[in-house]
Image (tube, rainbow, N blue to C red):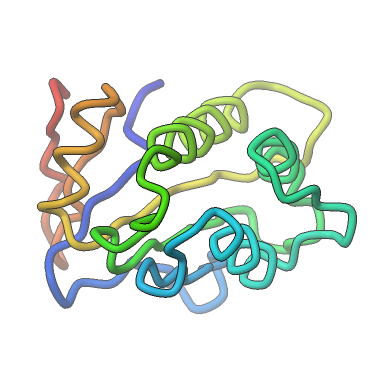
Length: 155
């Protein structure tokens, strides 16, 4: 993996999907996704998952590998209010983040699926950095306009 797929954002910062329409941006509000059922519903809605999506981590991994129904070649999952994400079932957060990481890595390998780049943007960075460090998931700080990424987590 040449660069991190996870990007942490400062307060008020948003992912860059420009030029307009160049990336598919799915906004996930952690304050509305306190359980896995809430999270699956939000992901399915925001990413327009097919009806066959099975509402479990294996099914999530499978649909994130496909993404053929999304026209753009770059897909960004933006998780805001990370500190509230899965707050009613915190034991599931590590598994969810590892599925996202594994899907991002697998999408970069040659496969039968359409070539798309999957990125995960998370705000706020303080609560996310501790969790990602504990899981040994590489990340960087999303640069402010005109600056280079600030690597972290051993990068």
